[in-house]
Image (cartoon, rainbow, N blue to C red; front, side, top):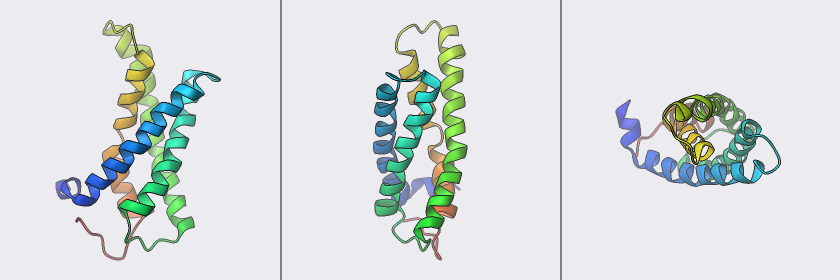
Length: 140
């Protein structure tokens, strides 16, 4: 299991995912101008997810033999689990843990940043084995 997270492919996944996370994070701030925090987190996640799909297909899982529609189906399914993780952690931190810890500034930003980072490992495995599956799974 550890070998998956020490590969070149995982590092590229983290880099492209980091960019998608920045898109996610930045768009949440924009969406939050027109909607509540909870809805903005979900909308931002969808924006980041589209960015992540394109980047993963182009740069990370280049040996994928999945047809585009099948990759997109599995990508959405894996990300449905991840968005639940992101949302739950963001809400828990924003409305309970951070206020209990005495944090008074940047609560939505801190909560959302932590929420976005949590599914990195589970998402990588899901995308590697389902979204962008290849006949030969590589770890390079």
